[in-house]
Length: 523
Ligand code: NDP
Figure 1 (tube, rainbow, N blue to C red):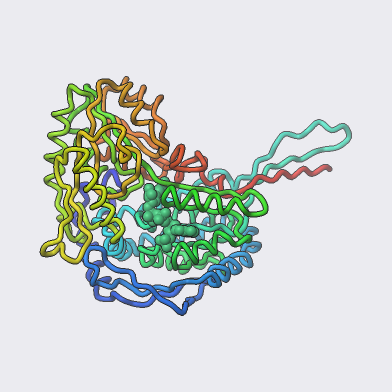
Figure 2 (cartoon, protein in one colour):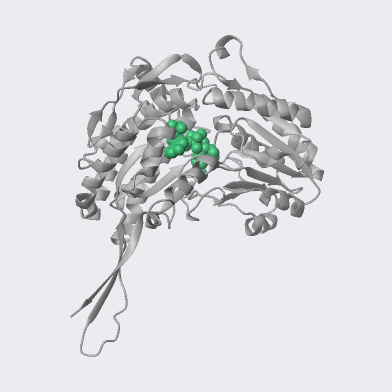
């Protein structure tokens, strides 16, 4: 496997050993299900009075682990621990911080199959998507380390002002803010926890991390890697519990100096408004939802377009922020592209996501399952279902949240579902007269996360100039709108999809975790 680098773009044809090692880890993980896990505060296990269970969405009778229902008091204890650890950590030379975080990334690599097995069971990701999630986590942490080193700790000598009789030294230094809060979503539980945590820690902030209630186990296993790397006490803390209580207490604590929230638009905007009620403005990195379009020109390669669209529409059951949920196809190629997309969709296998043969697993929970059914009730009235449209309830599907991958055409272009993130395996297709019309529709949403295009190179350049989104791909069979990787495609959104305008895993990201200080010394 030495020559193989797993990314979301390379994962379609992995070496056999990857499967063997995943299966070995899965057996080991399955033999130890149902254990109780604490929160981790100041490096110690920390237990709450009440507990909650993490369940397998493919078989809700399978209990994966028992987790702590942290309270507002627990949230405040974790923040106090981080606050106490901050001065020491922020003054630790960045080279030492980098070295500890690289150690954490190495531990992730060493445990990658075990953690991927847990992600597959807990989120319902197929095995390669699960491996991608945790592999990306290590790469995001390493990319943050690389940026820190490349910028030599972000210390820059400025010009010397011409003072007569004195010598001036002017230095610009980027310094950490303090306690940094990271709140992550269920769908990339480790990458979207580890990425921001890595950036916050390597820049010298102390961290409190809260995962989604659907995915405490995956994030606990990641947190163990950070803990075991030997970070000083209190520098990294992991708490679990409901967003509405424990999460809200974290947001409301005035000792939080900055935060990274990745999740839905509504929750993110609520947090943004709440956080703004503090005494002064604090950095707020929001990575929110998407309604990602793909445009197919009359000059497109039909096969590439169809393969890319199907992968991005139905990878992780349509529950990626970057999922391709809208497709606009120029009239002359419409029938050909649609027929091929339907054909490929009908070949997708759905079932236990840990099994090698299945591309789709279940949706994450009963809410998503119900959303799928409600959206379909509406779409069956307003459009034509080309394939799918049903939940699966028989046989092996009986105890899980399985929904068919679904394509819907002929929905009126003013229907609200063209603009609303659905986050289930439903993609809508429309015929357009020309590319200008397609672009108007593509941009006519409050989101601007990712997009895809298939057509000539000249058209692709026009597309890049006009699309309003943070991550854009042209002529990519590996995924029309999905599959970014740190260092290759830094990831972030425009408009309602993100707050900072700077993408994670890119050149400008790490700076968001520090404020600038100028040191002028006169000799
Ligand atoms: P949610 O917005 O439901 O939850 C995200 C996190 O916020 C969870 O940890 C949740 O905890 C927590 N939370 C909820 N309410 C509060 C609160 N009042 N205070 C503090 N924390 C709170 O998102 P999902 O987990 O369902 O994730 C899917 C969403 O994330 C989609 O919209 C998707 O597009 C977006 N996303 C965006 C990405 C990007 O990079 N732009 C990447 C991946 C996903 P709990 O689970 O306990 O409620």
